[in-house]
Image 1 (cartoon, rainbow, N blue to C red):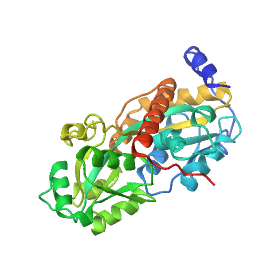
Image 2 (cartoon, rainbow, N blue to C red):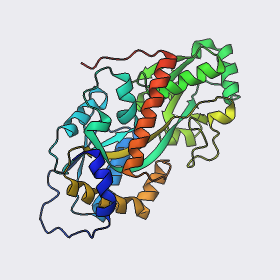
Image 3 (spheres, rainbow, N blue to C red):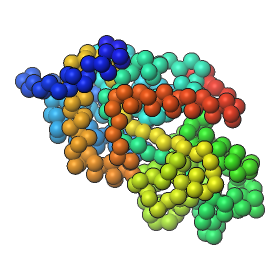
Image 4 (cartoon, rainbow, N blue to C red):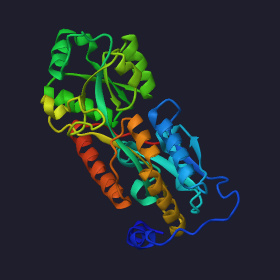
Length: 328
């Protein structure tokens, strides 16, 4: 089944009644793979969303499987080559679906050809945080820039992985404010947060929802968010566009996708169930707990977003002359 067939047929078939399933043990062997470890909010989000899905559709008894490795590519390949029976899904974020095809010259999967959207779990952005080394007098981005001029030894900013959205956000900040900041790439958010709290690193970009305890306690301070407008779950934090940094708009998202050749009836059954999941009060409360923007996107809207995000990433890679990586 191809993407066009799904988009043409889903509207009509979604209106059909859901037939009850009497097969016992139907959920056996069902898995949702995620290409990260257990420390980030994506892992907690996926597990909790799966629990809500079980409540609204007990027949879809998926196991949430963490499969870190190869910068999430291992999990993506597992799902790409999985049987087309609906038993195997992939949890993705914007990085997996848009950015990695810009970063790698030979990414071994094609997001728009190999996967088809199933559900949208929520939207996040990135926030610029400063740690223990930065003076308490620093309240704004301009304060931070002035502080870096006076303390150039702390001009490094943390980013999760080379070439990531957080890396691009830092380059955008440096370009707009005409200051020589330097990216320090980390293998994960938790490692960056540890260095921020220990005073090894002065500042960094992390996805909203992370390090909530450290932010609430004041050990980390958020100076701005990287979306084009304020992030709704954090209404008191200004966006960079308000702070004189134009063209800063980095918004990520979480969702579930299936292999593109999935059986249409199985896909529609899953899609109906995930719609019920998204409408439940428990799911919306879960989104709020992870500081996710509670927007809903249809499968076609998700595809259009992937296309737009990929095009923008390509433009930024060219603007900042980022080198691409060979996947081996």
